[in-house]
Length: 164
Image (cartoon, rainbow, N blue to C red; front, top):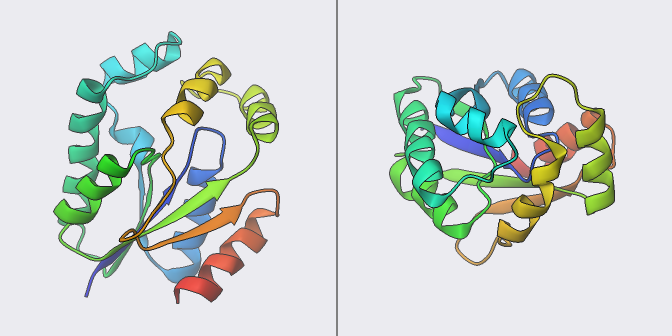
């Protein structure tokens, strides 16, 4: 049976890096949620404008469609999934069990990471809007929360120990 692991969190948390490393370790398909944003979303974010619900929902439906289309038994997705309603959409429409791995850190660490990042359309200026939008994982949302101050290899090991 297929299952999806959604590596979530705000920009700068390391979703892509951790997600790719975890997918590689378990032999899963990796889906980069950022690659699925329409160009209009990318331009908006690059210009320092936070996305609206009208921007995010079609993007999330594209993420869900990619999960559904995947033929692999395990899929790892890097996707911010900041609000409960976004995670509910992913869980209810993906057609398979979903677990969320929330990568967390304090705002100062996230800000440092974003300021050091090169070549990404998401500017550090939008971190505050993402943190304000982030809703904690709750009952009915299978999840694991991991502090990202550890090296990527340690984070992946925590995921493997907890999820497999």
